[in-house]
Image (cartoon, rainbow over all chains, first blue to last red):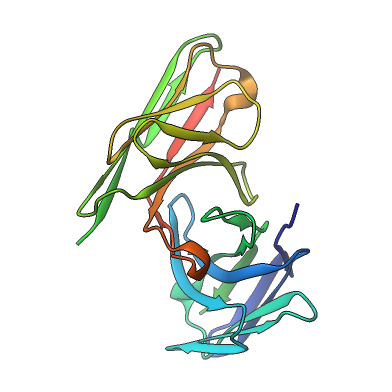
Length: 112
Length: 115
């Protein structure tokens, strides 16, 4: 079965720097989503990119998708301490209906 | 606007005791509903999902069951808890999106500790 795998597992940067997280998956997808999770809370949806899209922006977030390499990246520009959280990619496979398969996540720490 | 409620926030239960976690959604009709479990520092494992009342699909064999007695109510249950059932349980809902996909909206989770 397909599985999103993020790297790095953990990332520590200074406020104002950019943060890049990567996600790889194994089988064909309909779309890929990125979520954020603050410690001890539920996940919050950030952005959805469809398989026929290559890049998408939302505020300080930029997501790319390369279906030939089965990979995606999430870029957070001008990071803030409040961006400290875990970030997960999730894939919606062509045979999985509305079910998502989540990766293990990247723990981002933004130091003030 | 749509909201999702999940309770309790924390629960400590002895091994062998029963479990009932409840999740309700407001402001939408016929949502897809999901139960996930998350181990510490890990990703989410889908346990059950439902596309309608009484329609439950189980993703992994386990000691748990789910029910959907009403359109916007999703219940996770166990008759006898095991130590391995400890974890962070998350309920989520989404609209039906077909191949276009839809974001999932999560509750704040229940942290379950088995003693």
